[in-house]
Image (cartoon, rainbow, N blue to C red; front, side, top):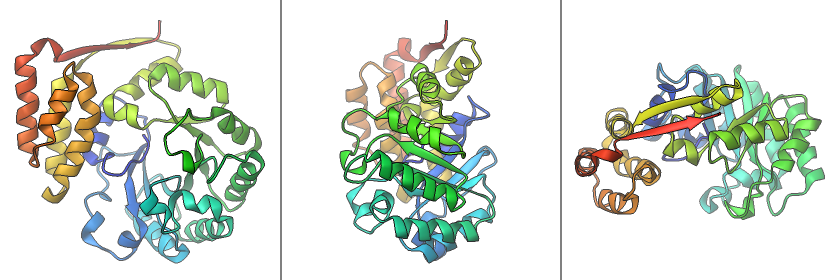
Length: 318
């Protein structure tokens, strides 16, 4: 599951885990500065729960010492790995020198990796884009080899350069090229919209795993479908859309402080509303609300009026 700010909440992770025991879950993108300072700002987002494992914390920042301190603190909580964000293309992140801006500053990226590798005894991974201004394959391969040489245990590659944001189609040939030249695991990311797409990209690129973001918010069961396809089987499953909808909203209410309810509730609903026919109308009404209980009431009201939409049959394979 891709780490996504304001989206990969404990509530969503719990929903995913109920369908797949093996999916690797990630925290939200966490500010290394806040974590290193012991700030309460990220306390709920950085909490690890019994349903999380296997679990990875992702941190973002541009100062090696601060990133290392954050990595050490989070490693103490127990996790499979610490992931360094070198892929976020949000302007407010890149202007600080963090996220995908590190792709344009290999010496600083090396310092950060080296510092985190020394500080964290757990696994260390990097999620990155295929470039900053453009995708330059020789430069990408040099950068990826540097990460491997500095002790990174795995790389997740999103097949777009940073300046593209989410425009155009992700270039999975870059994933294949990096996989062919590294000895550590390479995970591919970008435009995975269904389980069939995930398995096809896995096989075409030869990568070791596939990371799914937005499609997994709309369909937390997608990993179970992937499991079935990878195993050569098929699955047909009835999903209680109302139950999942309410469960995640209740989890946001119960796991996070009230100040986070509006942002996390709205971000989840933006994607999950796509499971219903009148998605635009439902989300329009939800956006007016700040309290989770009010959002839940709107969801329950929708399915009371449209009971035929409550159960959705999903399938993958022959």
